[in-house]
Image (tube, rainbow, N blue to C red; front, side, top):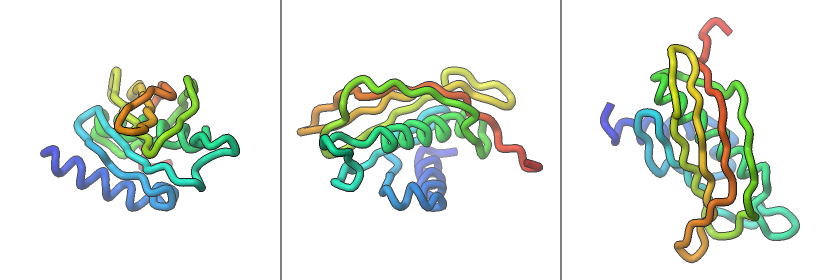
Length: 140
């Protein structure tokens, strides 16, 4: 698949996810085993201290992990499990999640993700995540 085709397919998948549409997530880049998702921060995505809500960071990491795993497995995929560590408050105009497959087998991939908050063009790492992504079983 060409890089353009990966991005087009990724955009189609996001468009099919009502929650992703609600948040306004966009594909930054997609390649086999790798993805970048972008989300513009707006007031309704913040918590009471003005930081991006942890649930927003968690969603972004989860979706990026699944995209990376799905492209590595060349299959529709689901998250089996993941863990996230919040490193610092996410403050800025934009969140970027970059995920990659660390290892992919026949039915599952282990992936990692870094989530950055961007303010004034400067990226700051605010969360890291790791997860296990599994092929979607059509008989499930």
